[in-house]
Image (cartoon, rainbow, N blue to C red; front, side, top):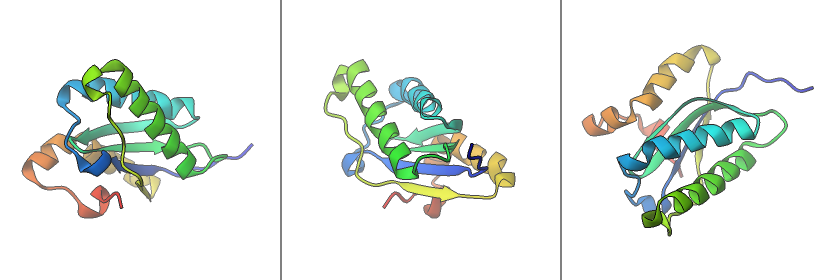
Length: 134
């Protein structure tokens, strides 16, 4: 059985970077992204975002590609969002994503970065290399 200790910081944005992810969707969307991560065999450490993108700090299963995992996260979460909120019936994620790996000893700091997205974007103290999705 394969085993890895890779940790991923995934970032993907809404189509055309439209700021359509309102706070009222946060609990549902972030919870669903965590559930999907578990369903595909991964583990979500932190999930958060801003009006036009999300961050997922996670472990992913070693027997599938990052792109396959992200495709499942995007398709299943957009479908769930469209079904749960009629105002989001045309919601789509953008093509593409960002994926970073890092030393597992940095997980606490990166998890804090992900969990504090709203405060960071409000103060404009984000890290460009961790926010880029294309």
